Length: 245
Image (cartoon, rainbow, N blue to C red; front, top):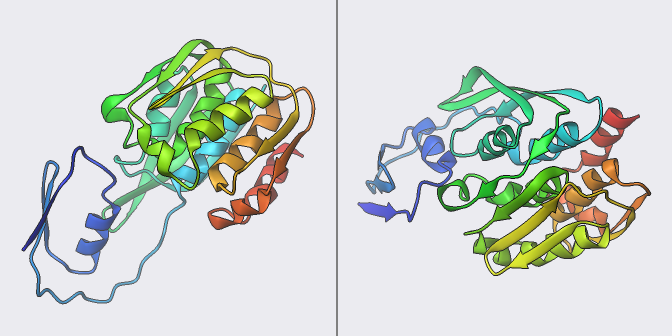
C-alpha cells in the first residue's frame, strides 16, 4: 500500500485515469492511497481539449475589443479550472458549461466576451489550480484596472524556465508596469502595451503569452524561439490566425 499526502489539493487527472483502467484508488482530502498488486484493464480513452492551452484564447477574447469566442470540448476538471474562476473574479464575461464526461472527467464549452477587467489578488490555495496559467493571467492584469498581486507561486521559478523572471522581463519590454517578487509579481494596470521583442526562453507558455500580447500592442511583437510552442500546441498559430483574420 502506498500513500501520498499532498500539501494541498492538486490536479487529479492521474487518480481519475487509474480508476478508468480499473485500478482502485482511495482519495480522502489531500491523502491518496493505492494498493499494490492490482492489474489494470485496457480502456479506450478520449482526451478533451486542454484548459491550459484554452487559457490563452480565454484571455485573448477578454482583452480584445468587441470579441466573442466559444471554445468547444474543453476539459473542465474542478482541479484545473482556476483560469475561469480568476477571470470571472477579474470581471471577465466567461461561462463554462459541462455537456459530457470522459470517464470521470467533465467536458464542456467555454464562452468568452470582451469586457473591462479589474485587479485581483492571487495567492494560497488558488495557486495549484492556476500555476501553468499565471503567465497569461499576468498579461490580463496589465489590462485590468488597479494593482494585481500574485504570490505563493515560487514554483514558477522551476518550470521550463524561471517564469517569474521571463514574464516580468517580457512584459516590461513591451511597456507593462510590473515588479518581480521572490514568489510572484505585482502588476499595475491598465497599461497601454507597445510592440517589441520578447524572448520565449524556450518555454512554450512564455512564447504563447507574447503572441497573445501582440493583440493589444500598438506595434508588432517579435517572438524569439517561437518554435518551442510546438511542445504543447503545434497548431497554436493556425488557430490564432483563424480568429484574428
